[in-house]
Image 1 (cartoon, rainbow, N blue to C red):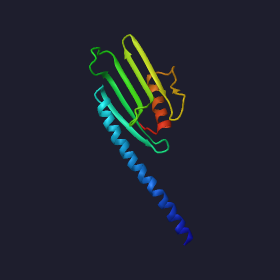
Image 2: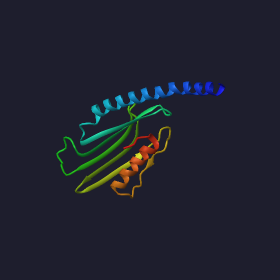
Image 3: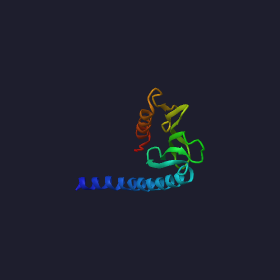
Image 4: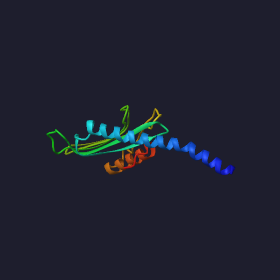
Length: 148
């Protein structure tokens, strides 16, 4: 009888935090959706977003993913790829992958700044575009729980 009672207490103590996390994830998803449609959706030819609520950090992370020609640019030879990780509510930027490819140029920026850290983590600057993009997704998964 004592074991059943202890098990019940543990389950009852866990239930509110699980429900709270689910409601927080729902609020996170809703805020990410609004932020995406207000600020990012129409910026590139192809766009999407991914969100994740981190209960330990109490942060709603959203990763915006865009590629193609920037809308409104006359230079149709320049192609952009952009991934950005933000706090969906506060707007703090936690990471960015940005690559520009044009006939005469090639520029890539790739970094993340883990929550609570003063230092950022950069992708390998000698890696090619695809490897840096994959490194960024790996860092997003490792530090923010964002799975693309």
